[in-house]
Image 1 (cartoon, rainbow over the protein chains, first blue to last red):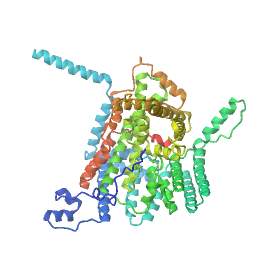
Image 2 (cartoon, rainbow over the protein chains, first blue to last red):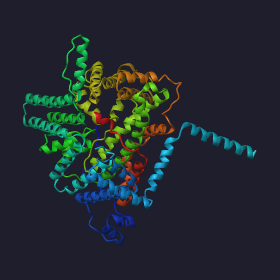
Image 3 (tube, helix red, strand yellow):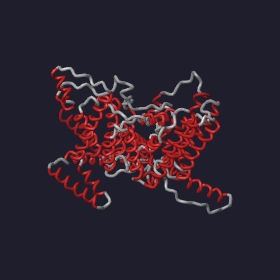
Length: 155
Length: 470
């Protein structure tokens, strides 16, 4: 039985596989690192950021931005969950404040229609959960009968 | 504090931001992570933080003493002392009530009834994991596989680090102590792998495991006599999928959270229902426990070095103890015994009965047989008593009654849980390799969408992970 370390090796162990991918001179590369983007777009040669600490620092900033973007998306499009969570907190000054803020936040985003995508997915998923075997059979029979009727009409 | 909750999300954001802001000072970073781990543990019951500290202190002290002496006899005594301390802690909190109850029944049977000191001991969450971790540290120091930690802080953090604290993986000192020596460094592959594991783990736990538990498995196992064979068969396969999605989700999230903090944990699951033998199953299921049992129990007992009969005895002992590790109940012991018996039969078949010219079982047939044996054993594992397990097995003959709980949606969840085993090996790592090339806003949107999808379809509320009780 082996006990593999599943995470990929760190930069010191495998420099060829680690570190950020090169930044192509594309508009998205600008968001990553404007200086490198500018250098690549103009053909100017920068010193290679070979230092592992620099690479690790860039990776950390990259990860932090991902977490921020994902958190903002959840806060905006998943506000009903925040509201539900706030109502489950034990009642005290802090939790009531959180509850009131969550209510206002959810209401405002609902006015903008930003709760719709989640609601649509949720509703469709709940509908799928309610499907019974007889519904599938009914659909199957309906399709078969329709196909037969089409065949009869063509004959 | 459960992983798939808002409060853990907020807790993690604070820990992530603070830990990386302290990265220039590794000592302070570790102190902060230790404090955060205690807060995480205290969320359940602050009283047991003291137990966690005492356990780490004792293991640090014993390992330090072992490292300071060259005298073999003294080293042996010290390692025995270290193991005994850990087993005493585990035995008291986890098995005291069970053993006193069994002793009382035994005395009653021989007509010598006594009032035994039966006290209600609260089971500290994760105790099986951190005591096994402590034991492996002391034994590894004794064997010379790992040097005693230089600081108490490292041992405290090794045993208390919140991602693995309550349900593993059982991370050994040789895995984690070297990582504590210097400030960790993140790379894109590691970070993306961590984020994907967290999203994947949340999906498995909150969508598949929770739905199967509340809509199929829990009602059927509560009263198997109330259901026909269709529901019972569905519940048996449903539980096989539920326990995999539940436990592997915890491991995935733990590995992912640790990765985002810059630490590597060992893999704990490797598509276990793809195994074509029970031996292979245990190489893929709860790898950190099976390798622990192999290294610290099966091999010291003699492993497969003493002939076929001795190997079978060693397997039985290992799996009986593996069964009781899961909980103080006869059903867990029987579950372990069943695995021990089937593993012994496999060994006998391979080495004594099967002739070289006999046809081999095709690997597909092997997978089907192994999966069904494992599923059958899960019935014992899930049942709260032998009576429930027996009622469940008897009910498998009631084919006349229509299924009430096995809906198309439930079947889809079960098939979905099994289909995960057909994914290419290391699929998450491969996806991480691709996604790590994205610029951060695009990667953030991808992760955000994945989390939103899970949030939109998950049921409200979440049950604790199954392995929390162990």
